[in-house]
Length: 416
Image (cartoon, rainbow, N blue to C red; front, side, top):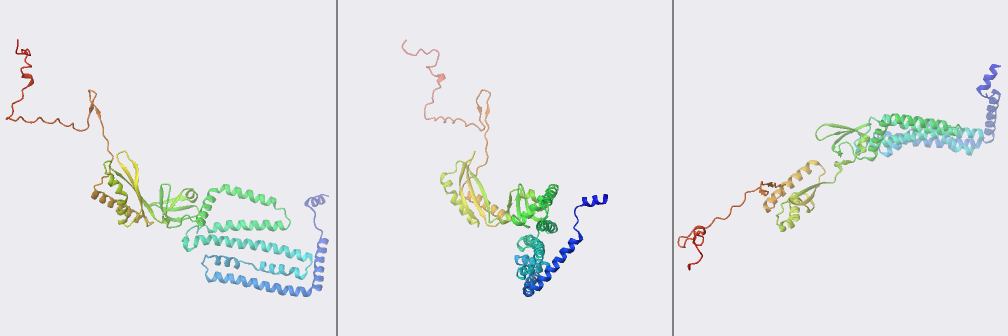
């Protein structure tokens, strides 16, 4: 009694007799099919053989393309490598599926062919997609234009992630075609993916940032870049970080995500470097010299072999009249830019000296209060002019203090 209860709890079991009946039905229907459709079957087999040979020829063409240049990363080689990965089982099932309708196969045989073709097609599509995706990544990382430096050590991880994702999707599709309820499986894969993503979000963030560097190409190895207050030459782009050699000699390592979050200036891709000077003239500079200054500066810049952009009055300074000068060094490298700035600066000073134009410098005057409330001037006060010497030919001027009118005994009149 206990055994019967346990068997009932385990679920219904298909009786052996029913299995034997279904097998006998399949065999008998197939026998009848061969007897009644033998000509269609022979023609379908011939056509299927031709399709099989044609697909094999296409696969050999892909293999030949890969052998011709195994190291190439062009799109032709990528698709050739994908075609070379076509499996024999898929080729057979394609040929059978294409001629199955013409041969008039029984429903049981047709259902079996459709199922096997679906399995072969889904997994073959996953293999093709994997090869094309990995080939695209390799095309970006190993092409001549990109120096082949980025993510060379990360290809194993990328291959693993791509393979897992594609074959998981293929498995879900196959199970769905079998009539299996895949809702729970999809939910489980989603929860597992979220858990893994949260646990390794830093690594995945840098990995996807590295992929963004590959496909977007903001810079590559050998480029001179600037970010924030730092900069240098890019030496390597890795899975987690980018290594930059600073102009002061040290190697700076920054994670790919943090680097892409900043504004990056790629100095190697400059078409030119713009140089700007601010010239402060003394405020007693003659007006005609200030009016002629833009043309004068253009002559100086062009005589030094640089490209003049503009020059003119900018603002009233505290102790100067300020003029702006802008010109371009047409070489993107730093050394020619530095040399151009030095050469033009010295030429401006030389021209100003020749023209008598003075550059202002900061000045400041201080006043001190005197004890009686006045000001103690910061400079020497001018002396009063000296009295002229007495000419002997002329009568000496009387001293007002000794004159008769000022004498105490003088009455003011001779009549008394």
